[in-house]
Image 1 (cartoon, rainbow, N blue to C red):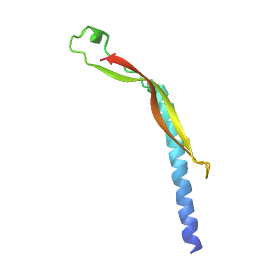
Image 2: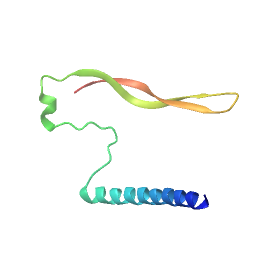
Image 3: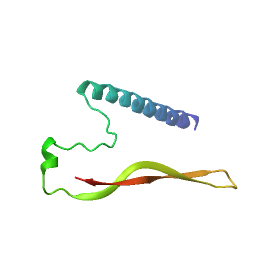
Image 4: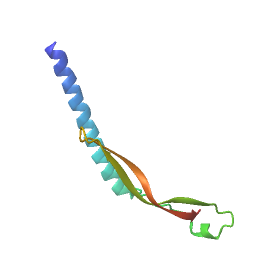
Length: 90
């Protein structure tokens, strides 16, 4: 029975090592290739603003969060909400 728990804990540790090393290898590789993480900025072609068939809509301009604190337990539940809106045409 002890061997079974030892093998299970060894397997878990091995999986953690593989995940941690693969994520660092991927981040190094993405820097070599020139990948950049996206921060929510919309990239459009240069001639896109000249198009006549653009669609306009209301989108979130600034994100924030609202939290509710349970007075009995002190636990906190937060959710992401839009603090201000802007009209954008794409």
